[in-house]
Length: 340
Image (cartoon, helix red, strand yellow):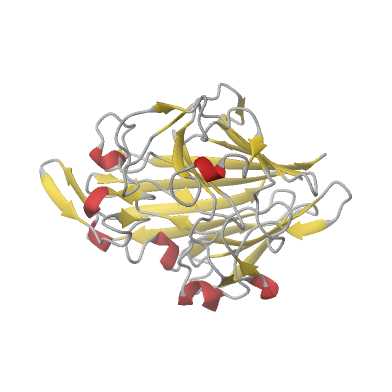
């Protein structure tokens, strides 16, 4: 595949119903327009108007793909095959989302663009040995495709060239189905197909145990309002990994979650093949100047980041995030939009 573009640009995918704007800076979704039940279109993701704003400071990780390892690694340390690795500590005592300059802060190559009924774009990034402290060269690709009038698919792949390495990619979009500039998401209805979470210590690192959500503020096995029990959650809101256990499948992917905005009747069903999903309610978003003059405050969006479990590299009982050279890491997500 030859490179179509190697500087940061904006690209549009449009199938007449869904319109998505992405940039190869961080393989980021900057806008996503979908209709409500009356056909009224709104941009339902938080973000910025210009690429410069993402480059200047996207501390909240709006819309981007994070890696080499998403989420937290305890004290930024791990051991692999008897070798100790040390990463940048950039989130309290932990390493978060790949370090100081993760995959969200680099320009990816655009290696393929397709128009037509199923418009798509493929981004590629070559991560080198020692980058942010991680071992080995890794070739990463991410393809966004509008697979139907209701669906967008993201296929992420990564192949280590020469060394064993942890890999855990996540898509960090913040959703507000009423429109990115419509205030908080506490009235959104959410159902998560996970009956357990991985509880965390005071530094947001999983303890290693699995906690049933039944009877707790974390129970979204049936749909409920985001705000209904959020005050009972320690800290500022939800920022927890759910263990996905749905039997329901679509296109080979497990059901992850359903989100509905009662005001517009817009709905998002998410499907993926990862073992967990981080449910995050924008707890640390605080007066960020966003698109079109919008100011994003706490709980102005929600993230459903499918992933390997946080700190899995240091938790032997968690599903492994280690990938061998010439093996392929794969992670796909299907975003299904509707209005009823």
